[in-house]
Structures are given as C-alpha cells and as structure tokens.
Image (tube, helix red, strand yellow):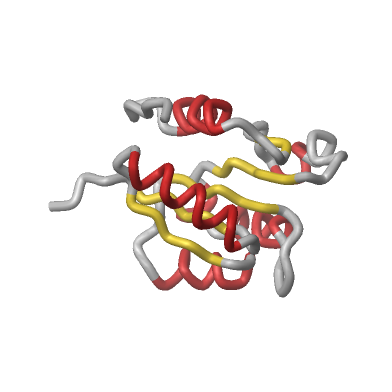
Length: 129
C-alpha cells in the first residue's frame, strides 16, 4: 500500500515542474505533472485525485483561474486544497475569485512552499529541504 501523498503540479514551465518535482519527491511525495489547466482537469477527473494541487495561473490552453473555477464546480474535486503560484502582480487581489488564500508570488522560497503545504495538509510532516 502506497502511503505517499500525491501532489498535482499544474505548471507550464518545464524547469519549474522539474525543480518542484525533485524537491517534493525527495520529501516523500508522489508527484504528477500537468502543463496546463485542461491537462490538469483531465488528470483530476480520470485518475485518483491528489491531496494537494500546486497551480500556476498563466498557462496556454487553459489558465489556472479557469481551471480553479471548474474545480470548484465539482463537489468531490472542490475539497482538494490549492496553492496558487504566480508572478502576476495582482494575484493577491484575485484570491477571492480563486477562493484560496494560499498564494505564492513567483519567484518564491521553497521554505514558503513547505509552510503553505503544512497549512494545507495539517496532518503531514513536511520537512524543509
């Protein structure tokens, strides 16, 4: 039985995907990647849901805001916590629309991500790298 918590990273930057994936896997998480919101939504619907989603806002095909609106419309998926990652200067003002207060302004420190993950997954023992 696999006890690893699954994290879905929805991010169009391959470099950010790779970096976050390596860090989180080293911390004992199972990581799944999606390069846009449509791919992320397909993964949510067709696979076992993750315990947490790391979501970029600006992506091709379907952005993070549209993804989040769809996620919130599906009851069993709406309960999955989301940490929004964005370089957008007005992302904090959009927290209400996104229905999350877990926002990381890019570039961010890994320690800040780990702290938000502790908040989102309170029963987890997340270690700093």
